[in-house]
Length: 484
Ligand code: BG6
Image (tube, rainbow, N blue to C red):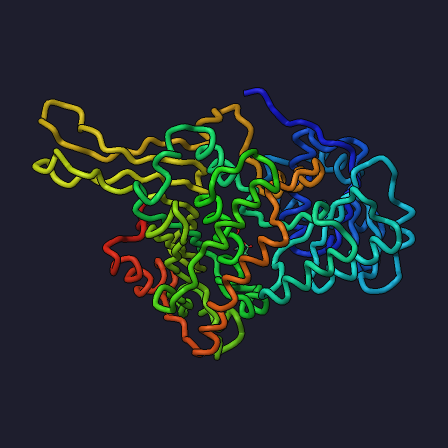
């Protein structure tokens, strides 16, 4: 397969929070991989910015360490690392004070794309934006990249939007939800809107329900302090699962353009039904192979959920009466993220004597083994009469790309390059984030008021039994997490 990597324009990417965990784990390794792919221009620069006193060499040592830790061995070598490091620079800066800002201004070049990446606590967004504007460092077409969490509720999200809007226009702001950069998520749009097969069936007439699972095997060890204030609802549902739901449920945009797409997603959020407590199951993992959630969170009284399952309704013509079941959790049996679109059974079965014919299901696998499969019922080959079997029409992307195909890039690689290209399609707009919080807030408020306790669940399982019951009571069942 011929590489389709298209070089981007020359850029200066100023990375605030350059000494932090996300920079080391995701942002710097992703930039290095794009460098290896030949996408990063030779004179592009990554300018690390943080409070620590350090020179360029100190920062390069840090980047080199991060690459050794977070880029697999076969994918890096000393020569390319050295060449990449030569494009990395550093500036000590005080986000809330004056130190470093005039030096940063002195470093900026005309005629290149300027991107400012805020990989810092959201409480610093406003101060950074103000200084970038105030010191004349950012200009009309500069880009701001901000990480989640974008607020902890509607009020804080509104405040963050206002803080950014005081210095930048919406078309300059790139709010990251890294799930949107995942290959399969983009492919969901391609499958829905570039094929004639699915659209006629993509509605309440033919779809029984949709289930979205993001199961993780990791716990919250090491990030308990953040997580305990957040929980699965804020950490995963308000953003990642909400985005998956929107892309599955939205109407076709007129064109594949940022605002057209985001308008359609926003309409879905506005159509979400308010949630009844009986449609929500929250869980918290018990001690098992690892310590319990409350030990990881260092809060014995914690009522925060490390697992949540919800039955969500969408009140519009397309989806009325079709439940969207969402679940996500830590320390579950398997790392698996998928969207299953479960079609209805045929109106009448002519094969009744041959037994039950399972209905079709389209499974969109985000990870692992990115791909899709459509389960079909066919006749079992052979002379043994009309015996029916359910087989998947499987498209695993790595296989489809072939042995010489490009590797499926990490979400961050795609997203950072989109920032440089000036393409906001896979980023969340301010009103979208606010609408998601407006739906989430009353749900959280409800269980805080009721002092609701999450159900305990054993580590390495599918979560609490009650989550299974959420579907069983409707005569449906979750996809078995132990099935390969
Ligand atoms: C992050 C959450 O946004 O997404 C984490 O804060 C979660 O709790 C992570 O583990 C999952 O991302 P991925 O790409 O590993 O599925």
